[in-house]
Amino acid sequence: MSRIVMLLALMLLAASPLILSRGDAPDIDASFAIRAEPVPLDARNASRDRVGRLRFLGGWELTSDDPDFGGISGMAVDGDDFLAVGDSGGIFRFALDGEGRIRRASIGSLVEGPSPENGGETRKRDRDAESVAIGPDGRSFWVGYERANAIWRYRTADGRATANRAPEAMEDWPNNGGAEALVRLPDGRFLVFSEAGDGPGSSNDALMFAGDPASDGRAPVRFGYRPPEGFRITDAALAGGNRLLILNRRFTFFEGVAVIVTMADLSDIREGAILEGEPIARFAPPLTVDNFEALAVTRESGRTIVWMASDDNFTPLQRTLLMKFELLER
Image 1 (cartoon, one colour):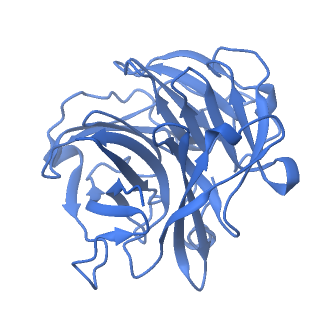
Image 2: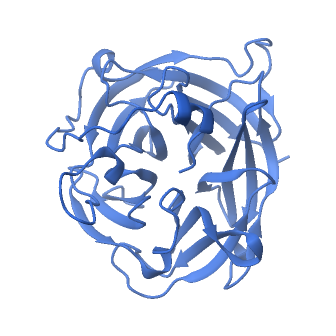
């Protein structure tokens, strides 16, 4: 993952050992585990509810007294149940009701996952989870890890690992730029996107696996993704049919954070091709925007619902935001 440079320099602390024995209780009282406070789309214009092809349905700042909460980099939604992973090995589960209230929540750790190459104590940086996908029956989920450039599969019920691989096609991805987005297609294929890997035509490297990348050793189709100029991919999600929504982020000292959501056609993916998306929404101040790294899509009363969440990097200068939108056809 690409850290925001200024915050890296000024705010981030050295990683401390991860407590792997910590459990993930299924129904911790929401007032103790995770809280949700409403936020507007535009604090200067409360009536604004549209950004490009996205119609704003609600937004919340998520907070917790638990110091392990934060760093959300990937998110999957199954019904009203959210499953998010963080770049320090955290796993967060919560349910949001129709009024935007959290009705159950839990905070835990991915107990099993990549370990240091040379052995020794496992630390937070060794469990840099950047992406997540959930199976169609909800029984399994997959996590993409940076640094290890690996994909792990887990049981949803208890978070135990059931398979893992570090695919050869991902081994040369940068420590700080691998498995940034992970998408499971309806037919069982998987897409994995690098944030910074070298792809064809100066694009970012991306792979399409014919089966489960955590257990299937077949060589993937290699293609590229070209984000909007100056931006980097942070997540992706299916939006129905052959449509793929892609979350792209940029940070500059002068402009701060900006986010562009693009839509791409999956039928364009083939060996050596370069995927480019059509921008459908752009977020920048004064809109409510932060380090958005997680994207999920659901269906609700016939509508396509787009969820975005941000990574606070465990710093007081950033927030964990959860935003809900309806995808408009035009």
